[in-house]
Amino acid sequence: MKEKLSLIKNALGRFNAKRAVNSEKYKMTNILLTVLFPVFIVFMAEINQGKYPSKFILFLAERPTVVLFNVFIASLIFYGFVLLFRKGWIAVVIQSFIYMTLSITELFKFNTNGNHLIMTDMKLVKSVKSLTSFAYIKITPMLVTYVAIVVIYAAAVFWFNPKVRMKISRRIVPSVACIGVCVAVVMVPAVSTSVYSFFNIDQTEASNSFKLNEKFDNNSFLAFFCQTASENFANQLVEPENYNDNTIAAMMNVNVEDQTSENFEKPNVIMIMSEAFADFRRFEDQLDLSEEAYSAYDAFDRAAAEGYKGTAIVPTFASWTVRTEFELNFGLPVRSLNDPNMPQRELLDREQPTIASYYKDWGYSTAYVHPFLSHFYSREKVYSNFGFDRLVFDDDFEVPVNYYGTYIEDKTVFNQIEKMIKDTDEPLFLHTTTMQNHQPYDQGEDPEAEMDNYLQWIGHSCNDLEVFLNNLKEIDEPTVVFLVGDHYPSLKGENSVYDQLGINGDNCSVLYEQPYLLWSNYDLDYSSVPEENVSAFYMPYVIMDLIDAPRDSFIQAMMDKMKSVPVYSTNYNASSDRDEELDILTYDRILGDIVSSNAIPEELRKTAQEANE
Image (cartoon, helix red, strand yellow):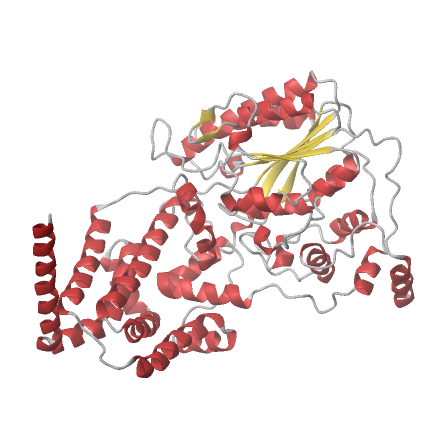
């Protein structure tokens, strides 16, 4: 063993000695490898995510300044690394790994759901194992070839061994300067705007997913990734200018309608946010789908005929379920938070004034049910502050768990809800976010027939919903059920149904309109439910009004706001003005002092009244 180790050690010694000779012997080769690397890695990252070299060559011919910007940024990063680590191969390996990892992630993400990679997606890196269950991951010969080319380049740099012979004291300042300039370009708005303008980077504000994709077409991958990151930093939520106790008190100075009558029966309230539930029948003239496919919604229609069907405007498309979930759990618009993809990450670590907390105050038992991993989106940690007495995730179900496709079927969720209603002495308020109809939609007779497979699952979900509602009729407890889809389904990026429909950034508002169902197992008057479209964050107040629940000044203020501003959504209508009151109230309850909670101190009310006189 010692002899083998000695042989290996001697071989490595000779190998490194040869590399040391190469550093001096092949100086011109080393210069070329070092100078050309930023260009090389930019080209490889772009070609890989775009799949075909011809596609990148056309982009280079049409938008050369954008590619020049990518090389500029890559050069800053690379030479910063070279000066920091002194050895060229280390810098090459690190940057190659970063660029190709991002490029491969962009390739898979767009192929999976038609959305492009942005920096805020990196917040889900801890959940990468969970994300692989969503994605269409296909290792192609082209992908293997592109990665192999990058590995060969890195191996060549390792062999020829370019080095920087400057002392650390002379290297550290220029290294920090290179990295610092790169950071400033991305994170400092004044610098970003000027640099992007110089290189003709598209900085158009993208108000919806389709406009974002159009921006990608103009900037391609690397510049798009940088520019959207800059946009995110510039769009950080700040305290509204007029946020103070007096302003909040003025907003809360409303005439609270008396909803504390004996009509409040405290029915069970079940809020179902159905994963990817959407009604494609509105496009039946444009889509070549069979009558059998459209019959998937028959059970939903029968349920709607017994209750009420309306349209809610959801704040997201194809992904970022937690946007709609936030609006339903808080009764607040994500637009007021500047539309973060993961609004729950904006929250302070404290007890939150949620919709569940209201029901808890009214004597309800409260629960959240989600048939997926508790750590995804940090739900278990974050939602423990939402006023739920109980959180039920995939490992916590008390009924037999069955799957339909990739995920736990809706029937299992409905069975769990029925059990919780029967086992709970108090009236139950429950929010569930289902998973059955989440992509990928490649499980069916034809794996490539995404829409057929999707509608098959929707039909299965609707049928199970009907059974669930019929079972509730047999339970001797008044129960109200609300169901809405969180967003239209994610479909593959190339030649998807949305491409066939000609959906773009200017006509995509229809994809934020989601049908909702209100249903009860007892006589309920739906005449108070608004007939017009309303944003999803108003729906908890619609339900409260429907069941004659008590109102405080905040609930009343939101009910009044629903009449004056029924829809408040950037994705649905970016041209609409910001609403200062909604923005201030949202900030107050998310990051502020929760001045708007329940009773208003008399001195603040008096001050507000004086200000209004």
